[in-house]
Image (tube, rainbow, N blue to C red):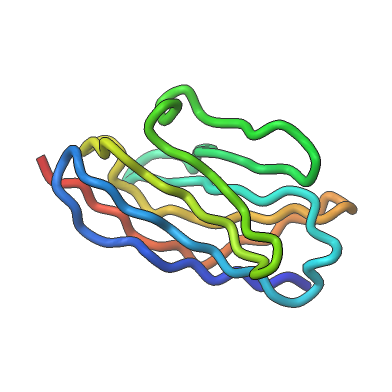
Length: 116
């Protein structure tokens, strides 16, 4: 089992920045990929960015050039630095981890609200 705990959401004006953190615990040795997804009201959950172990980082087109995903292996924590935020970035952001056996784990979510 893997437990994911997010932090760092909040309310920010358009053009501002936020940094989300996701701390993993439990069977962290089994984690292959970590990432962030988001879900806006009335919309499906969508991928924001993923960072696999030893692979290429992947970003949604809508956040390329504005968001940066990174991982601090010593702390088993993944970050999402969000710059130049737009109102359309408003959503609940979920941390995600996938094990080597392709089992997926989700955090509880953190709200990000961008005001215009």
